[in-house]
Amino acid sequence: MSKEAVFTMKLEPELRAEFMAAAEASHRPASQIVRELMREFVQHQREAREHEAFLRGKVADARDQVRAGEYSPAEDVETRFAARRAQLLAKAGDTGA
Image 1 (cartoon, rainbow, N blue to C red):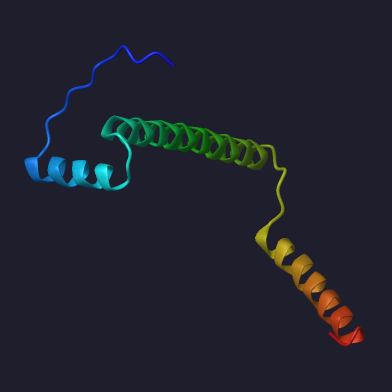
Image 2: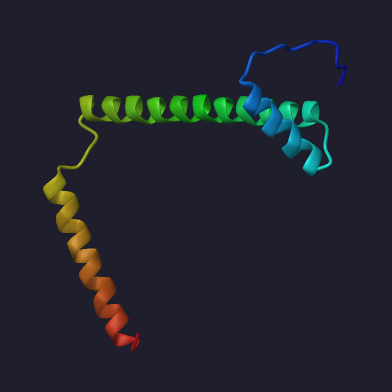
């Protein structure tokens, strides 16, 4: 990858000194560390946007299902899962688990 862009930033002298010392102690150029941090930040932001879009899609789908009447009332779900829990507990008791 070509390194043609220059990035200038202002920061506190103490932070710069600590960063440069940490970079030297890790035997890596400061510019390499900054590039890695930038890549990680960009990736994190991309993943956050993708996750947000995924969640928005799930919520939109759920709202569409509710509007279409394609859902089960909470009481029905509780009844079904109570029966399922009882069945699983009975089965676990039968196997000696």
